[in-house]
Picture 1 (cartoon, rainbow, N blue to C red):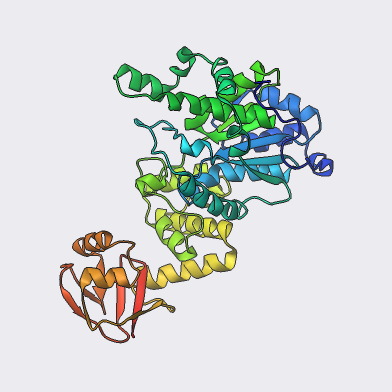
Picture 2: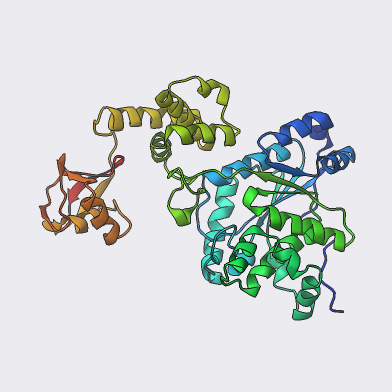
Length: 411
């Protein structure tokens, strides 16, 4: 009574696919898994697990703090796919419980805590997006509320007794905030313990994450040993810098490219990154053949990078169409062949109202900013005053930024 809940057979039965495991030797598998990694702790332990000739339980967790997965997630998802295609079991944890706690993940302040309703809404979109990259045959999706919500206060106290505050303060962002006398909330100390306990509950053999997650992943190793389990192998991957060229890709920084965005939008955003960032992405996005791009002029290199990313997320045909659209609309400044039609009933509207009503911006504030920055035109004429009254004509072509168009149909 009062023991922390365990699960000998969590989730669905593990499907053994030894025929795939036999296709690659241990050395060949290690070389595939090492590609693009920052850390493997410990490589000898990974070899030992592979010698058991069974599918490894490979864990990855993502908190649904926003509804979109982006290119930054692809770095980890592609590594998971490599494990899955070699016959191992991918356990994708949607952290619907831990998302309600908030992990700063290397930031200088606590991440905003979301409501249960917002978390579940975002989680539903994750399920659809995950299977754009991973195959259902080797992937199991679990929600960590399934076991964490059932823990009693006594059980949580038992879990906290497994790790010291001194060890917690070894985490760089905690230590820096402590030294600067900045707030660190007790819930933030709980986050790594709960993420680590996920590994205990699921009996993970391997956990993969971004390099900013290394502390939390190592907590999982420690807790497994405390619970008399073999420690998981920790594998970290580099963080993809966002389109701003400065911070890691994140929706909170508005420097991301969502994996479900339209092909032409993805292509155009990749073409807009700096030359330096292009070479960084080539190294990190391992599904891109860097040798093909390395010696190309920057613009051609970005074009090939953009093509490969769209092809990976969609298919070659959509990549070709996105490339043709970019050349026609952005390079040659022609109108796209297909323009979304919007019905407007009003005869006249202020420019920012028109942009918002046409769906070219998500808010009126964004519309005002867009127009003030010179990013809006109507029938080819730039409009810089967001208060300017626009006479609305049937067939009028609106352009927002470089790639967003709308055609007016009078209602």
